Image (cartoon, rainbow over all chains, first blue to last red; front, side):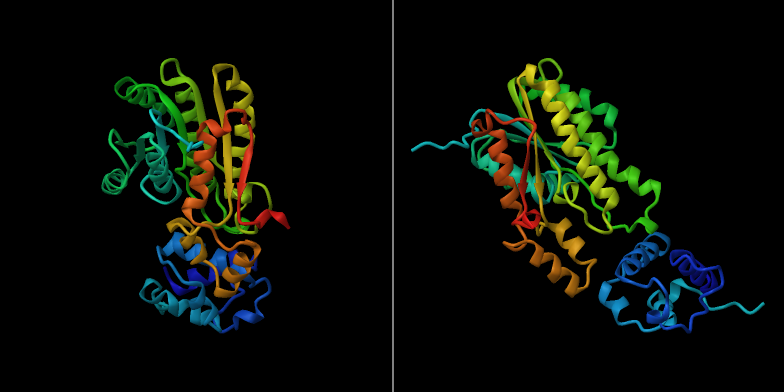
Length: 81
Length: 252
C-alpha cells in the first residue's frame, strides 16, 4: 500500500473528505481522534496490513507520519510519477 | 459428607475445551466424576486438555463448529459410541473489539456463526432421540456485555445477548423433554482471550475496566464453578436463567 492510500483510509476512518490528511498533522488536532478511533485504527491495520499494533505504540505517536512509520516497510514511500 | 456437585457417571460434552473457560470446565467436571468429551479444532491442545483431566474415560473430538449443519450427526456419532450425553457446555466462542465504524458484516457473521449459530446447532443435536439422557443440562456462555453496554463491542454484545434470549426460548421448548437450558454471563476473565482483549487497551483503560469489576478480574475456575453448578443436581429446579459471574461488574 502506498502512503497516499494509507492516508485516504485514515480519512475514511475519521469521516474526512478524501485528501484531507496530508501526514504532517498532529493526532491531537484531528477531529474525532479519540480512544474508539484508536481501536478502529488498530482494527484497520490488522485487517489491511496484518499488523498487530500495541495501544502504547499509538499512544507514543504524535503525528500521522508517526503512524505511517509504525507500519514500516508495509507502506511504500511516495512514488514520484 | 456429601458432594452436591457430584457428576459421577455422567457424560458431558464441552466445546472450546482446548483453552480458557472450556478447558477449565473440562478439568473441574472430570474432578467431579464426569466423563468428558472435549471438542475443539486444535488436536495438540485438545490432547493436552485430555491429559490434564482427572480419571479415565475421556475423549477428544476434533470438530469445526462452523460446519453447523453437521453438528447433529456429529453428536449422534458421539452418543452412539460413548453413550447418551447428560450435559453440554458450549464454551467455544470468539470476540472482536470493533467500534461501529470499523465493523463490517463479515466480522458480524463470524461472531454470530460460532457464538450463536453453533449454539443452536448443538442444542438441536443434543435434543435428538438417544443423544441425551432422560434428563439433560445445556449451559451456554453469555457475557456481561450481553446485559450491559460496552463501547467497541456491539457485535460481540449482540451475539451474547442473543444467547440470553436463546437460553430462555430453549428452556421453554425443551423442558418437556427433560432438558434444562441455562447460561452464565462472565465479566472479564484472565484467560488467553481475556488477556488478548486487555492487550488492546491502554494501561489506563485496563485499570478502569478492572475497577469496574469490584472483586477484580476473574479466573477461568470462577466461571467453571458456576457451570458445574448448572450441570449438577444442584440446579435441578433451574432452567432458563442467566447466572451472572462478574466480580460485581453489573452491580453498579
